[in-house]
Image (cartoon, rainbow over all chains, first blue to last red; front, side, top):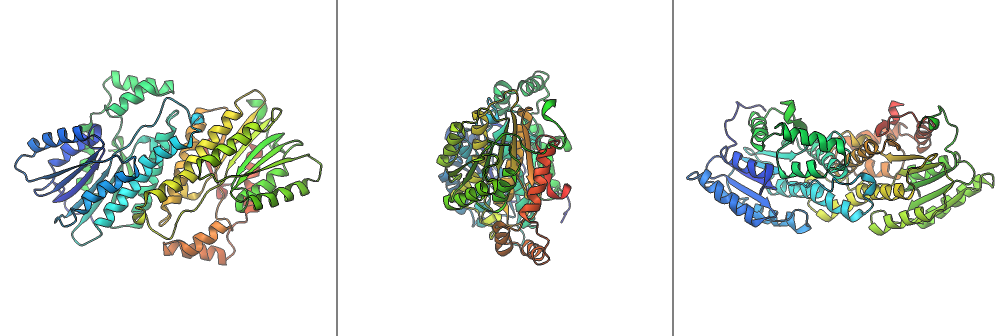
Length: 266
Length: 270
């Protein structure tokens, strides 16, 4: 399938969840430069304010390029959240595109200040998994149904994964469990639909709010220390650094579908 | 710790043993095998949705014990897909007077296959996915947490947590998205637990393809033709395992007690 190396992502419909800050926000900015005119960028997040700020920034960044930017204010932690996104996406099915890109980026860290033994409250675990696992499956399924396989349409589904999908971190039981679940979910999807391009990308330790949370609240003191040292020695990655590798992987399009690829593998 | 690790133990000691999904299939067989390996005055808590099947199992266990070990069996009728079911199970475990036990054994066996007749692309119903993960992942974490809290670390108490896993925790099966996702999630959850609590013995055991109701479901309904075929031929050629033979290997593993905590061990590796 490897076509000659592309320099852009074509005329695309690109959906990014968790787009208002951190990795998702940087991804929206970086990817906007790789979309051909008339492409549509759908940005999903809970915070309307931050989304409109981002929209303003993007508007000036891609001025004159005829990029359509749609903001969807939705909480993917709620059952209605996915449906709200789907409503916007279904309105776009008539748009003439040659690439579909879905970035399942939205995620939460969960309470890392406690150990697994303290999670006896099932509601807490349920709501974590609903947001971090169920919503990713339901949104992916919905989007793929709205844009079924057709000649000339390349469909990419990216799962923003983590080293935690493959390695257990003490005091991170929810995060590790959710990321392992997602990786497997997308591996099954890749097996089922060879026409899709499915990638689980572990972006490395990023200098984001989530990392700050990890550094300050992890119950496990070793982890706290490791993250503190990464931070103080300037070894955390910027979102831009990590995103440029992700985009390179997508443009080269040579990964095996379903693979877990880590920033440091590249 | 070293005083607990004696090669080739012959029994599980005076134990409190909790088994979920105990009314049929693999869980039922494990209850039978474990009952035979408990020291006198051990307690078994059998959890399942069907009270009737549990009561039958209890009768069988008590009958085969005779009076030789004064085995105490409690049946807990509970739906672990519901918060109340998990809470009820934890409550009973807490109330069980098992002060003088030397072994806590929790077997997280309850699970559902999910709808395997459909592919991942069809799972747009959030409630369906949520309910699946609730029974197969959340309840397991919450129950394990609650039971471990009820029986905290103390000198002379060995604590073992078993996750009944599957090859599907490691390998994606087309049309089995819920099952694979749930099993991968559980394996990771227990790996984290093992990292956190070096005092615990945590095992994810993949029992192999068992001749159970779940296997019938897999064979008849899998959306993926190849999977259906491969299970059908395993069945036709008598290559499915009995719960008894797979259960026996698990017993051996637990008695030998030399697996690295958190490991995923498959029937076929042994």
